[in-house]
Length: 353
Image 1 (cartoon, rainbow, N blue to C red):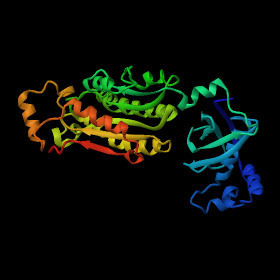
Image 2 (image 1 turned 90 degrees about the vertical axis):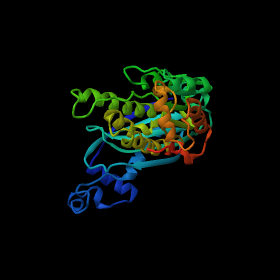
Image 3 (image 1 turned 30 degrees about the horizontal axis):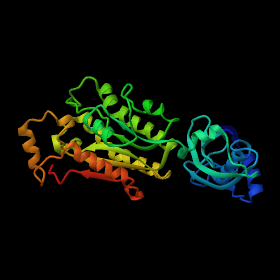
């Protein structure tokens, strides 16, 4: 059985008229140019149900093909499809009875819609293909993956979390390393704590803006997005992507003395919001865990005077250690509530700005 399949098809006024005749939906918005000009779309648009019919074609002719019985369809419309156009319908088998489907414009690659269908086989035979067994997430051993494992936090996480794997950075990207494990393991969790150390170059005084924004902003965010894509494909139920943030990126902490670091790190909150919505569809979560000053890691060189100053900001009068950090991360990993998804957990211990 195929794992991936796609086909190209043209949607025209004529196909819209034929679908209108077959479905009974003869709304002129789908094939009458003059009528559509009076609507907000200004042009004829394809029937949404036509896309479901194309999903049926994918199921009956491609995945799984013959003996296919579709049990359910689900589709989300992103953009209207203006006629005429040519679209690509692509499907990917993600487990024994579900195929994820996307509809893209052939010319611009714009995503028009996405969804999935579930199926069974009319001959009552179980799927025995070795290829299918490889992609069934539950049959693969699950692991927790850790970025930034060369730092103190990463080392302690690797030591204290069972079945964990360190991800190596390649040209400041970790997702390349994760891809190597994609077919060997399913993902239980990903802890992203690999981040560039704070810079000290102001926006207006630096002569290498492109290099700095690339290093502190584009690469880390791109890396997280690519890692999230892999998590979607091989993550198990209740898998978590935990992003490690820092209140040190807040302007009140240092009056933007570390602007590029602040710009990149502070964007984690928005990245978390977006990924929590997208991963939530697959029963997975994204959580942002934000700490204040920690005794260890990049703060290991703090003088006793600076430590005393930091301690005064805490109601308890003491700075948390890396062991405290590890315990909080372990608590998140054990928490299987879907309500945790999208959370920004600020573990500052009540520290003042």
